[in-house]
Amino acid sequence: MPLPSRPSPAPWSEHPSRPGELRTLILTVTLADGVTITCPVSLWHYPPVRRRRGPRRRLLLIHGFRGDHHGMQLVVDALPEQELLVPDLPGFGASPPLPSGVHDADTYARVVEALARSLDLDDQDVLLGHSFGSIVAAAHTAWQQSLPEGRRWAGLGLLNPISDGIFTGRLLPGAAAVEAYYRACGRLPEPWALALLRSPLILGVTNLTMIVSRDSDVVRYVRDQHQQHFGGFADRETVLQAYRSSSRTTVTSFAERLDLPALLVVGARDQLSTLRGRQRLAGRLPQCRMEVIRGVGHLLHYEKPAETARAIRRFLRGL
Picture 1 (cartoon, rainbow, N blue to C red):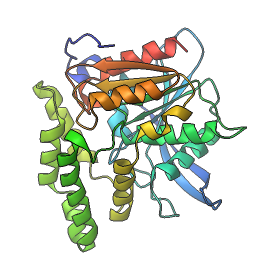
Picture 2 (cartoon, rainbow, N blue to C red; picture 1 turned 90 degrees about the vertical axis):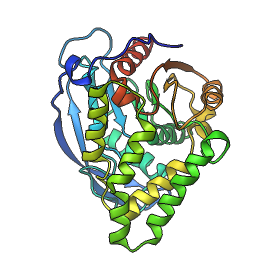
Picture 3 (cartoon, one colour; picture 1 turned 180 degrees about the horizontal axis):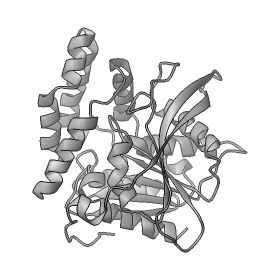
């Protein structure tokens, strides 16, 4: 259901930045082929800063492609009553790449399980993911629900989930250009590839195509965050593998196995999905609540954090 269209204030005025405690977790991850690896993962823990009613729920929040925990900061700030746990996925931000050398949705789903075990999360807790993080969260939940003794979450939150195959319909032209860009980055000598991956020109194109807000403070903030963190991946192979997985996997392919309360928070102008795709995804989720935020595209975590947080809060109250 559409949310009120009143604009958010400048993100830092309503929600002052909330300090988090950095933890480095040494995880034991069992891969799909049965091989076990050990890896460190950086995670930020945000204790609640005010009392709340209802059951104690911890929220594990997974960031999107080429992001890290910084991208979730405004949503964290807008949920002061909640305890949140926000990792940097391996190979991004402060987390080193996996020793397996594989960085795709399935492997990250197994990292999520190792995180949940290390943090003693249980069936009162909630898993959330944005964009590529929504694919990782859905892959993890579908995998665990297929196991007799698999992990159960109280709920699953998907923020601008990847609902459509991007190489079809109106998404195809943009997807083809992005595909050509990453193919070039895979073929160039590595120093040139890294320069192209971190190019200010490419970052400018990303901002031009993805930012919807006309609030100059919000636009300045998003540009600054992208400049600081969009290039924060460990190496070329990590980002190329994650791109390939993010562009060829959708949440919709897992939907019918996600038999738990699920929240979809979607920007009405999301550049990486279609209205039909979002409706199809919602229709395939057995227990789905969908909230549409007007006046925003794929960057709702930057441009509409207060509205996003309110949608999450309503979902949690219904669990």
